[in-house]
Each structure stands twice: as C-alpha cells, then as structure tokens.
Image (cartoon, rainbow over all chains, first blue to last red):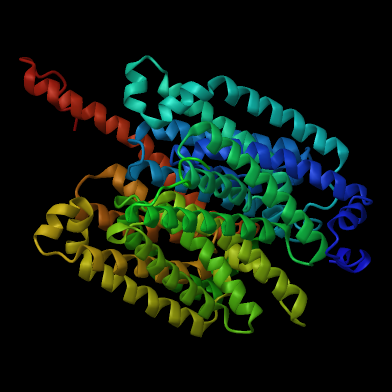
Length: 302
Length: 298
C-alpha cells in the first residue's frame, strides 16, 4: 500500500496525527462509515451473542461475499447485492430452523449447508466473471479506501432503520432471548421475533460487510458484545459498553491501518480480541477476589 | 470446447482428483456425521478458518502450505477441545477466537504477497476455494493415505464415540473415556479439515463436513446406518461434482461439489416431511378400525 509512504509518519502527538489523517477526504468518510458500522454491528451483535446465535451470524456475514460477487457479475449496485443475499440467507436459515429443534444437530447442519452453498455460489460468480475482479480478497477482507459520501449516506439510512426496529422490538426480544418458554407462555410471539431478528442481523451484516469485508464483519459483531457481556450482566450498561468498545476498536483500527501497511480487518479484530481477553482476565481476577472474601467492585458496577 | 471437456476424463489430473476426492469425501462424511450429531458444526467452521490462517502463515514464513494446514487445524482442534468441558467448546468463545484468526489470516496474506518475491498472487484464492484439479501424483498419494487413516480411526472409535455423543453421562459412568474421545475426535476433525482444504478450499470445507451428514441425520435415526449413509452420500456428491465440472469446463469443481451436496440436502428436506406424514398414517391405521390404503403407504 502506498498510503503509508505518502503520509507523514506517525507521531505521538495525536492531535496533529488526526489533522493530518483527516486532510484526506476518504479518511473522513472511512471514519464516518466505520462509526456507523461499529454501532449497528455492536447493537445487533449484542443480541446475537445473548441468543447464542453466533454461528447463524457468521453464516449471514459470509453470505455478503456471494452477494457482492453476484452484483459485480450482473452489473447491479453492490449494496443491492449485499442486502439481497444477506436478507435472503436470513430467511432461509429462519425457515430451516423451524424444522430442527433450536440448538440441535439439525439446525447447525442446516446453517452450515446454507453457508457453504452460498460461498460456493460466490466462487462460481467470480469464476464466471473473470477479468476485472482480479481477486476475491477485497470482497472477503474489505477495503476502507474509496468510501464515497453517497455510500456513507446509504449506510446511515440503513443503520437508522435497523436500530429503530431493534428499539421497537428490543424489550420483547430480550425477554424471548433470555427465557423463550416463559416468554411464549406470556404471549410473546417468539418465532416471529426470531425470524425478524435474523433478518435484521442480515441487514446489519450486509451493511458492515461493505466496509470490513465479508469475513471480518463477524469480528465487529461478536467481539465487542462478548466483551461487554463478560463485564456486566445488566442489559442497559452492557449494550452501551458494547457500542463503546465497537467504536473504539474501529477507530483505533483505522488509525493503525492508516500508518501501517497491513489490512484494516487485522487491526480491528486484533484490538477487539485483545479487549475480549482483557475482559476475561478482569473477570477471572474479580472471581478470585470474590472467593478470597474481599469486596468486589468489578462485574456488577462496570 | 466440448472436445476439451470430453478429454478431461482421460487426463491424469482428473484421475488424481477422483482418487483423492473419493478418499477425502469418505473421511469428511464419516467425521462430519459425528460433528453434526454432537452439534459441533460451528467448531468445524472455526477450523476451516484456522486452515486459511495456518496455510497463509506457513507461506509467509516460507514453509510448505500443507505444514501450516495440518499444524494449524490439529492444534486448533485440540485447543478448542481443551477450552470447553468434556471436549466441547462454548459457542461465543469459538466465535471470538476465530474472528481474530481470520484477521490474522488477512495479515499473513498481506505479509506473504508483499514481502516474498515470486509469491503466487492467487495463493490466497487457492486456499480459500481449493483446487482439486491441481493435485499432482505425490499430493494425491498423501491425500489418499491421510484420508484413509482418518477414516480407519473414525471407524475404530465409532462405537464408544457414538455412546459418548448420545449420552455423555451414562457413557462416562460406564467407563468410556469421554474427555479423551472428545480431544481425539477434534484432532481428527482438524486433520480432516487440513486434508479437505486442499480439495474444496477452507471456505467450502464446511459444506463437505455438514451437508452429507445433515442429510443422513434427516433421513435416518439409526446411528450406524446414518454413518454409512453420510459417507456414501459424501463420496457420491464428490463424484457427481467432479463429473459435472469435467463436462462443463466453466463450472469450478468446488462449486459443483457443493451444488451436488446442497441438492441432496434439499431433497432430504422434502423427503422427511413425507416420511412424517407416512408415519402418522401408519399410527392412525393401527388405531383406526378400518385400514384404508395400507398398501399405498409402502
């Protein structure tokens, strides 16, 4: 990447660094897009981790790749390809879930088959297209260079829509996620909510995939949420913490990727994983303290 | 174009592909059946990502790609088994760990393509999507031997593993080493993932593990029949896919194999509801005084 050579090297004065970075319009857009994606991924991912649907979430995120390849092949807009495939896959997984019992052998096999087949389709589209799409790596691992203001606007609109629906169904969804049987008994429409949530997850992954690439959406969805849920069990603070961690690792990742010639996804997933491990350590430490009888501040209060 | 396609049947690369593909599919079908029964498909998915990262790390370090595949996959299999209780790992922990693994994979890919002169530009694509038509005779021999060994070990431990899978507590009480089996099994899955990556690629590997086994689980409840069915389906789908891509040159073999596997799975989805209808018919017949249409249900 020539970017690192063109820019002045990283100085430890962050103020001048940011001024320098934001003098490039594409970096400003990258930070905007990164912020939108991080917030949506963190919120949708928080529910995903709570519902133990990480496998479904991962399958939805990789489906962005065939979506993009298909859009390139037939010449429609990339965003349409991303959203079309991700939402379609969400519906397919939701339909197959009905067959097998949740969490059982049938369901995980069904998710795996949907994922592998759609990835194979992506490979086919790519092979058929030949030529200009010189490698799938940009689609799989993403690129934060060249995000346009129009794309940021689209991302923003979808983000607002996804967050609005999640805000409306948030409370019953939380209930249905924590205790599906009791929720069903109280008249919550668990199955409908579960389908709706998968579709929202599909839209959120489609959105994030445009920036981070199909394979690394998952890092933004699962890691901040898992970290936050390690630190506190209360829904509100934990959701907020998840968003903050998501934003922090995305922006730090962009900062690092601007100065070092390695992929953005590598930095984002490394920072997020480091946060996850740190949360594990904090929790283990709190556990040791609790056992030794000293007062515990972490775990409940953070 | 058509002549080229027809002549693919007699080319040595096609023979290699059929030979290696058969054994790889056999191993994947056997291992995959237990993977599905134990509801560990997600673990298989995680291993497929480790396969990519391992291969890229080996290439970046200047080693043979296969070394990275096997060391990475078997190591990760054992690690995942170690994290969880009784050789099973938690969903979110797997997800978190392999989200990072993928990031690391893209790092090694960049390192490899930018630092090594004469690096194969398409190495990443090959690992991700496989190249079964690119195996030479010595690679084929290794693939056959490794896959045959995996199949043999799976068959050897099939009975206790099945017991441990279906009823862990009772199996443990009867003296079955549940934890050791869990470790051994995930090491086998790792070896199988490393081998199958060379054929269908790390991204499609999951299909070979999950689709035939998922089909078998849907079709029968009897364990050993299911195991045989899973292996048979995997081999059949491999052959169908190879034949299809030999006939239609623009069809990548990895896609053709996945398409065959998905078609079989979808067919099983349609058959199973029918079987359920038939069973309810049989049940109602045994209760009902007048057995109407008994011959039809067979």
